[in-house]
Every structure is written in C-alpha cells, then in structure tokens.
Amino acid sequence: MISSRDYALYLIEFRDRTEKELREKLTAKGYTEEQIEDTVEFLKNYGYIDDKRYALHFISDAINLKKWGKIRIRTELLRKGIDRETVEFSLEDAFSKIEDDRVFSIMEKRFSDSDFGNMKERTRIFNFFMRRGFTPDEIKGAMNKMSAFRDIDTDSEVTR
Image (cartoon, rainbow, N blue to C red; front, side, top):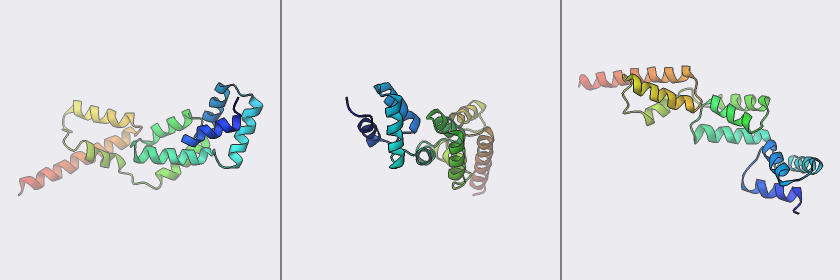
C-alpha cells in the first residue's frame, strides 16, 4: 500500500485541497487517524496545504471567472471545510479590493438587450443574480441603475 504522505502529495499535485478534503480522501483510502494526522501536519509544515491561501484563490476565481457574489462564495467555502473566521476574513479582504458595481457591469454585458419594463424578464434576471450569490439590494440597485441608464440613452437618441 502506498504511504499516506505519497498519496496526499499525489492528490495535491493536481489541485489545491482544503485540509478537510484531504482528510476525507485519506480516510476513504483506509489510512489510520494517526497516519492522517501525521500527513496533514507534514503538509502544513511545508506549506502544501493552507486553508487561508486556498480561500483567497477560490474567492478570486469565483469573483473573476464564475462571477459569483459574496453569499454563494461563503456557502461554498464553508461546505469545503474552511473555518468561518478564515472565510469572513478572506471575503472582507477580497471584496474591499473590488468595485461595488459588479452586478451592474455583469448586467450591462449580459442583459443589455433585455426589457427591464417586463416583470417576467426582471424576475428572470433577478433570479440569475440570486443564484450567483448577490444580495437582493445589490441586484435591485443595479436594475434601477440599468433602467435609469437606458432612459438617459433613449432620451439622447430621441433628441438627435
């Protein structure tokens, strides 16, 4: 049987893992609690697993690639076994560095041709952003801004 350290190194070779994920994989493979504890400590000492670093990378990818909001990101990190304090600190750190109008910029790109006067369409757009973890206030604010932006744009076309 391959040693628990070798198996853990094999697992993290492909992608970062949280401490919880690694413990679950090692347990499923049949290693003893003592072997698992020894392996986790070994990997922590060498910096191969670091839940804080994992959280920051995950948040960055979720914001920039997946376009998720704070609520969805928090839920996913907690599910992955990151402790609440680390999650909250990492979220505050990451979200303090980005602009507040993320919902509006996504809405402007993705829903520029949508009819914001149609209630069914507004509900569809609202639900799209809720599934991505944005707050209702963020979504409503962006919708109002988008509607106002459209009114200004329409007015300028009429006066031409």
